[in-house]
Amino acid sequence: MNNIFPLQKPAKVGNDCLIQVTGLSKSYVNGTGVIRILKEVNLKVHKGQMVAVVGPSGSGKSTLLFILGLLLIPTEGTYLLEGDDVFSLDRSAQARFRRQRLGFVFQSCDLLENTTVYENLEFPLIYAGVERRERPARIAAVLQQVHLEHRVHHFANHLSGGERQRVAVARALVNHPQVILADEPTGQLDRVNGHLVMDHFQGIASGGDTAVVVVTHDTEIAARCSRICSLEDGVLNG
Amino acid sequence: MKFNDLLRISTLQVFRHRHRYWGVALVIGLGVAGLITTITMAQEIKKNINLDLDLIGGATIIRGHFDNQKASMPQWFRPETKDALGRLPGVMDISLSIYALGQSKWGKEYYNHTVIGVDDAFWQVRSLSAVNGRLFGAAEVTGHKLSCVLGSRLAQNIFGQQNVYGRFLQINNDIYQVIGVVGGVGDIDLANTAFIPVTTLQDRFPGVLPDHLYLRCRTWDDVAPVAAAIPGVVQARQPEEQLRVVVSWEALKRVQKVSWGIELLIYVAISATLLLAGAGIWNVMMGAVRSRTQEIGLKKAMGAEDRDILAQFLSEALCLSMGAAILGVALGRLLVEITCSLLGSRPPEELFFLALGIGLGFAAVLGVGAGLYPSIQASRMEVVSAIRYE
Image (tube, rainbow over all chains, first blue to last red; front, side, top):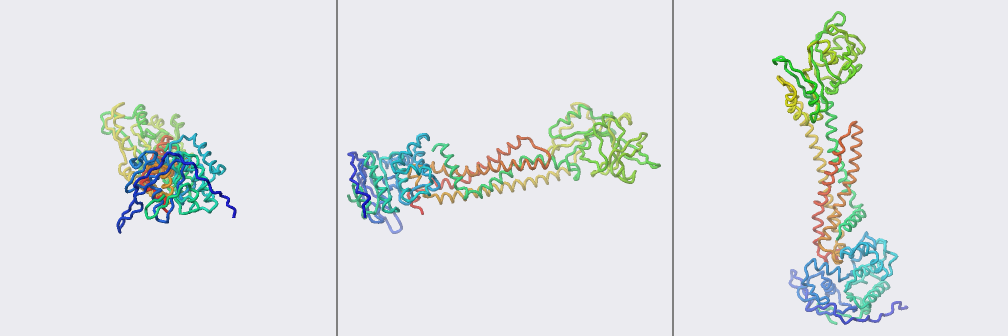
């Protein structure tokens, strides 16, 4: 079978440390006691780097991603993004942080239903306070990156699975984030579309300013990243 | 989130999910239409009912007269007093009349009865209509004509029938042409009366002056204040010794009680409709929040703050209620027009706009009140749980 997806060379990594996580732990308390999901995780991600976090189901990969995205509060640890201590921010400031500096791609929750591609991409711009007259150009630019400019006014439920995920990637890019966080972005896609999405991530990272962190259980997908970390029993290696 | 973005997004969402909202929208629309129609047309309907109130004793008619038997000097209603009374708020029409005693002769028979000299407004004020022939108008009054209208009982007694148009009758020493017979009279005395133009009576009965007055009020709510104002108005323009103001208080109370009961029933029905609509909004919004849980999580991940989510869902509830209310306004306008054409009268346009304002205000309160709890629930959703919700 022809390999139509040649392995990408690792993107050029910038020297700046974008994400610095130290001693990150996350525990839950239930009826039986304390469950430790993450145990003193340390992680550094540089600009332009594409990092895969792999591990078995239930190992805490998504929990780590959500903490990096300020969607979950850790039990302990520090998190610096370009030197800013993000855990010290209040709820409102964290929301502002998310819309200005982070982009998300989820597995099961990709696009807003009953809305067009344009409207899906417009939402992050609305929350970021971008003027209405600037939005069409920015949306067109990111759709061009994922080669879906011809679908701009189509409804989300009229797109294929692969197209939906690519639009989700475009949405994550529309506010020019510093970090893209992707939770199993290819989990519901076939092999061809999965690699297409990874092509886009590599293109983003190769720009040198944005880091991409991909959580996946697929080793073939993980192999497309410049760095692979494994998470087992709450401990991050790599 | 900017206001125009919020409005655009909310309106689009409501429109695109209209299959979910149409039931609630229908109820709100009907409730608002009912409210607008009731507020706008209530006075007109009361006015129209008022015109047919002789069946229950003419509850909105006020009778004024001077009890000249007890007065030191006979009094009568001056023209300026009549004009001033006619201008009182709530007065629809006014008529002066003179009572006298008469004797009719037909063949060899003599009949004693009351003769009332009336002006052309008398019939309207007393809601009287002709069962035979016609009632005399301004021409007969200004022309001092020798025309008369008979009460139905008097016509029957004298002629043995009521079909007496064109007959001639001697009343006292004058020959009058009968031009009509008046019917629909609940008062027996009037049925046994001959009516002649007030100017003619003054010509034929020297020395008599208009000492009786009838006022018809627009609605039964105007009766009490008008009755209270009459003595002051009379006193300001002439002696008011032995002035009597007579109101059918019992009949008025019965009418007001019935009217109040009917109005209460209507407003309770409309309020119940709108409250049910509010419950409907609450229910569909809770359903929307549940079914759009992932959407909420996704938006928060994109950077929406709690207040953005609250504003969006609250705005959708408001769009739903206000959109339905606007349809209700259109339906209400149609109902008002239909009712106006049926009644043959039209209320002031300001009343419609007042009702419109009340209806839209009520709908806004309903939208916010019913949509607030679901919106708060949506805004407080925890992001990760929402994203993972299935």
